[in-house]
Length: 227
Image (cartoon, rainbow, N blue to C red):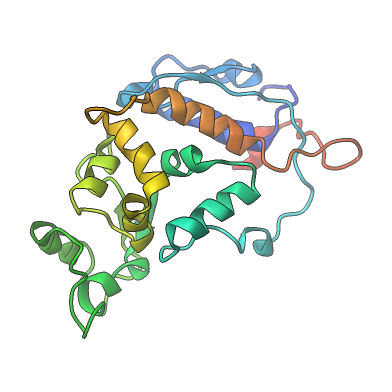
């Protein structure tokens, strides 16, 4: 067990390196280190600050204001702004969803039918993931078709009507968020962004939300027990 003081938040980010790169050692857990952010699956690396304090209490109410699957673009931006994150961070940090959060788009959206914004050729695949009246806990990647790769397919899905959540569709339809989607896609006439680089930047910013200082919080000596 490494005997250093390193806290749970950065270590949870750091674990991404341990499961996606080769040659990792337990001793390297003790360093303020370069994180191989998905390098094994095609991404780059970034520096993750360690040594911040952890809180002593964890409450479900602390995450009551997370972005919801039906949030509009404006509401999602407001929620990210409240945490010190910007519109680009919103577009960069995405994940997965379970069927219960979007099956209404497949079976009960308009007059008990399908959401017309979904690419019709994509519907059978979604319905296979999420059968009607069952499978509510089935997990579906937001970048369907490329979930094992660190790439920009999620943004291509938004453009092509193959988004999963209503909130995903809202990111394509909102002018300010659409701009960043197109930058990640490198569409003609747009100054492109490197998704791998900006993902690392946004992960560090997210890890700095609500930093504990002074008498608040504590250092965890054996942070590997965070999991």
